[in-house]
Length: 185
Image (cartoon, rainbow, N blue to C red):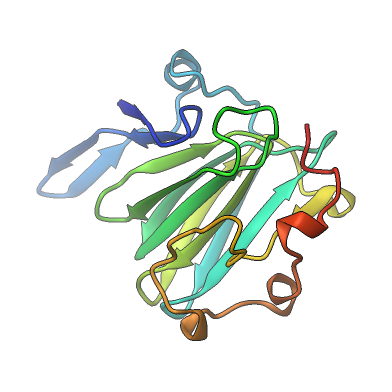
């Protein structure tokens, strides 16, 4: 397993090995001992699977606050996404920085996003499927979000704003400056 830091050092890009033969492949995508050695600890309590029909589906930017803050381990099993984590921890040396990577079924990489960071992604191909493990169950009361194209974050999304396919909920998210103090863990 290859583990690489990103522009935010505790956001990690993981490449699990794939063992190929004429039948296909085998890959161990989660191993508690190996991931713990890389600094990624669960417990993981929920797996989520999202399918997006079109290119340009944008989901985010989301997080859950304490006591239900979630770490996420994200991977793509069909298609491709541009995945992004944004550090909004005010005391962090990487405050307001983002880390963006392409995750795809072809590159077989995963992204670890620790609790306390915003997370979102944009599909790069139609019929994309994303699976992610989380360290806390979904909690509607702890759910927070920030507008995906907030100018203060300057995220270089791979699509034009007019191409973004958003849920009504994501379209109504506030700018970070309007979020008050919830983003100061």
